[in-house]
Length: 153
Image 1 (cartoon, rainbow, N blue to C red):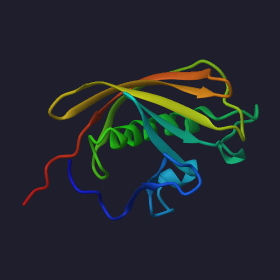
Image 2 (image 1 turned 90 degrees about the horizontal axis):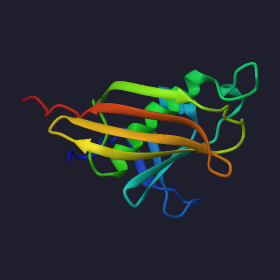
Image 3 (image 1 turned 120 degrees about the vertical axis):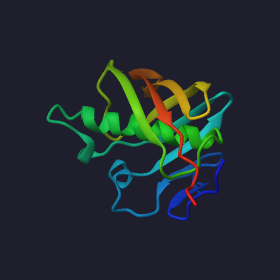
Image 4 (image 1 turned 90 degrees about the vertical axis):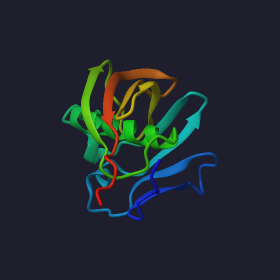
């Protein structure tokens, strides 16, 4: 695994013991739109959490599908980081398959439970579910991340 980049945040959360803050330090980047994200390793899975706000809602006052997809995509990277497989930088999403199962409620934490299915030399295959409340399934997903290329000299 490469060294963490200085512009990236991955540190213990002072208000949530056992959880790490995750995201870019630069609040003008996309991840800031999603709000505070925290992650923790829980056995063979990673748990990634955000709390949706009004800015994440649609006209039905539930989490907008685009905001949900953004959260799921970012959760893949937060999970891969918590597994110690990537740090930050130029890893990319190759595909993301999602099924929306229910509407996410505003103001109540959403949690993505992500598991690694397989790692190859350049790829990570992951899957998971997004839960809310009493483990109510809001979405299920699978995705592939291409790990960062080695630095060029």
